[in-house]
Image (tube, rainbow over all chains, first blue to last red; front, side, top):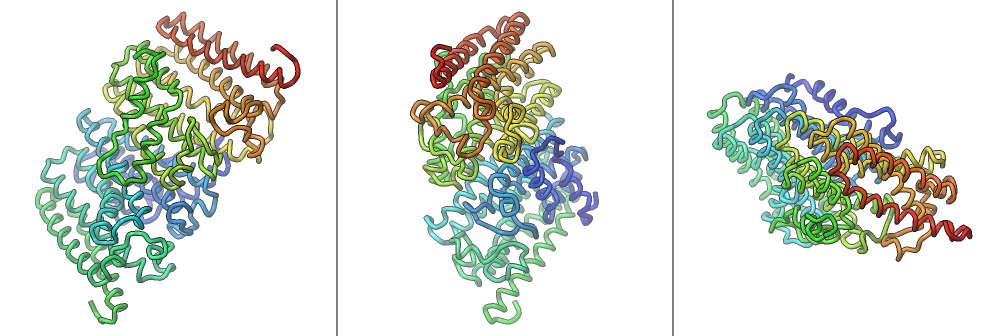
Amino acid sequence: MDLLNTKPFADAFGSFLPLPAKLEPHLEEALRHVLEHPGTLVRPRIVFEMAVAYDLEPANAQDLAIGLEYFHTASLIFDDLPCMDNALERRGAPCAHIAFGEATAILAALAVINRAYALSWRAVSSASREDQSRTLAYIEKRLGVEGLLNGQSLDLHYATLPHNRRTTQRVAHDKTVSLIRLPLVVPAMLGGAPANELQQLERLALAWGLSYQIVDDLKDVLQSSAEAGKTVARDSSLDRPNLALAIGIPEAVDRLTRLMQLGDRALQRLIELRPAVAFLEKLRNDLQTESARVAQSACAAAGWGQA
Amino acid sequence: MDLLNTKPFADAFGSFLPLPAKLEPHLEEALRHVLEHPGTLVRPRIVFEMAVAYDLEPANAQDLAIGLEYFHTASLIFDDLPCMDNALERRGAPCAHIAFGEATAILAALAVINRAYALSWRAVSSASREDQSRTLAYIEKRLGVEGLLNGQSLDLHYATLPHNRRTTQRVAHDKTVSLIRLPLVVPAMLGGAPANELQQLERLALAWGLSYQIVDDLKDVLQSSAEAGKTVARDSSLDRPNLALAIGIPEAVDRLTRLMQLGDRALQRLIELRPAVAFLEKLRNDLQTESARVAQSACAAAGWGQA
């Protein structure tokens, strides 16, 4: 697959959860809606290129790419529910709970999760028993009470926590970083990467995950709903963690710049160790462009002119 | 473990999802509540005895027993939500969403599911690759769009379907039978059971699953909340599938009797093939006693005296 051509990934995203003929019609309609709105597919593209860099079988790479993206997709359906973020739009379309009701949205998300675990397992099925165990335990940790689910709970109960950099970073670490660690680290782990490569990958995931979250936080504060493609300016009204709200826009921009530098150092070392991951520079440049654009908007909003 | 002594199963149920020190306090409290209310534990007891009958390693049997019970537990938390059955009590305590709010209940259920998949993976990790694949595909099917999730969606949209025996049986097949097929069939499958034994186990699961559902339907119509230990008499008000409401109490009692006979024939053949599964007679007798008791109440309610 070509990393810049998203169509094969969108096709796989749409077809890796086969819908049986006797599926209940409401659930079927909701699942079709979810499978037809794949988002940017950046995570499966990372998985696929990482899998090439670490010599995984293409069939296993595809299963892993779509499996991990399905986890992410399901987490968004849950996050958007009225009892959580109460969002209206996602991936440029009405949220599943808006279009099909809460119960059907939840069942659709559970169907996506069930398939995500099955695909993840299938992706590791031909690995050594040791690599299987290590990889599946890693996936469990990133998704569970030490990762994504703890992050989402901290996010929901942010009102009970101190509103500072430490707290917002803790939420972003468990929630956003967990979902970036999976596509960056799992293919390498499954391909038998040595410890020093895994270490740089973990640093990269941390730097990019936290950067991505700050970009998102700044967008929430700065941008209009149409521009971001989803419901925004909600962090303040819902009292949700947002670094720009917690420490101010200038400090958040400064933090973003430092994190991008940290990421660049990790990426450079990683490419020295494993040149085949040089494709990550393209993603780094995309994130850098987005960061600079948001930082510039932030500075303009603060009346400073050019960043 | 002793099948009649539930304490070891309750201990395992309570301890197989370790809660990390930094867990968000609301999520922690909800998970403790769930783990401290294990229900009757009939399914893990079946898994453990089946695992003995099919020579599985005790550690794998424990993981499978608790993993499958965690799937069941999570399904109950979701079913009880306001957007689904809107129940108040479960397993003799307030439902998770009543005690901790909807969002935290959902996150707790997802944590239980995440652990259930991990335990299921671990339970099959030492099996042959062929048995691994077959078993995990079977688990995926029973839980997903061809099983439990389809059943729950049919259940929720029963108002749009014809209210007859065929429909109620279809819902019960996908929902209740799926969760009884798992503990009866998976240990045998993992233990390399031949096709004729698996066939009788499938028949037994079907007969017992449908019987159990009719007992539950009759209880819903006949009994008070205190007696059943959960919110009852809800099927009529929520327009949910209930065989006794669809075809009348006498026909439902008749159907229950026939299904118990079907189950008895499957069990008899199975014990001939694999004498080690004779422990299932105890469960059969419990279900028979419960069926007779409910049938008697039904007859008394209808003014027929003794059944």
